[in-house]
Image (cartoon, rainbow, N blue to C red; front, side, top):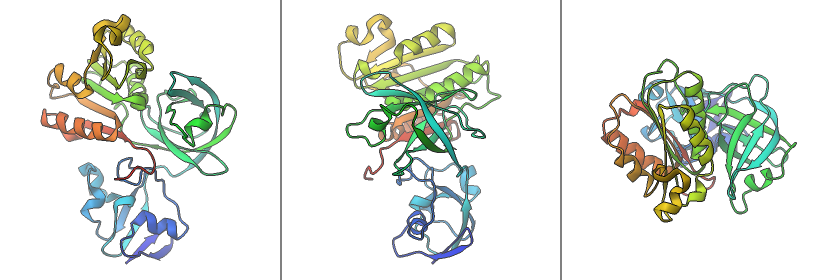
Length: 327
């Protein structure tokens, strides 16, 4: 089989994906998780049949456009494809770094000229020199420095480097993802739920909604193993006080209720995040849902919201997975 891509006809080896084939022949595509989760490797088929596995999990509108995941596609016939979305690379630099907790950094990048995004989408951040790259969501609003929340991983090639990277040049590619506020829905109920640094895209969506004058009810859930993992709690409480239609709820797995809640009291519950959401009752049928964080939890919540009556078209997900994580 042959792949026709950017003026080249390249042969696919048995068991090889489109992404692997293009890279083996010296080409590049945006790619991060290589498991069909992050969706940065979306490409468009101009001709040829796409295996169903390469479109698994994509919304019908994307499938009808001929979009598929290059990392999941083992073609069974010749296929002609083209890039989809943003593949431009932008130069930026690390403006400053703040430590939000022992395990989370807030990193501000300069906003490159011409770079466009919607709060809640994500970028691929690349360290010049060795090409190490990671995907991070955008919590900021356009017009300001780009705000990332970075989980500090033991031995993390990118996260540990960012600790002392103020002033360092970086490159970024994007923006990607479907987790962003949709204009024209000022009355629609919103549910934002995530774990860990999955809060970053949710915060971006929340900020965009409030800036747009959204006045429908918004509920935001942030989950963690321990109370210290709710790393932006005071800031979220301040937003809740400012916006009476916003309700913020925390969920932790460890710690007595009194200790977990602290000054916030009943706003933080000692139970799994999905149990916390279920305790608050079924979603209104018109609600739009955004889910971000650990891939397994995101999948489980997608299923629960769908079974509760929320159409798949109104469930938006951004599943986090570390590079190299096995399927």
